[in-house]
Figure (cartoon, rainbow, N blue to C red):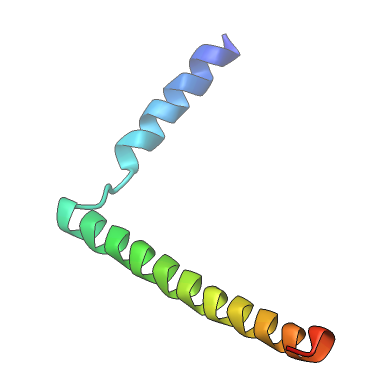
Length: 61
């Protein structure tokens, strides 16, 4: 019986949820994509710089 009570509570809570609109969802998705790309570019540049720095000091190139 606890299982039925649990699912009843879940159903009540799900009715209280305020779901985002399509426009909000699209905006948030583009924000995540843009932020991810910025971090990817930043870390790629840092990685490239560290590789060049290590090549200069360690390998003497």
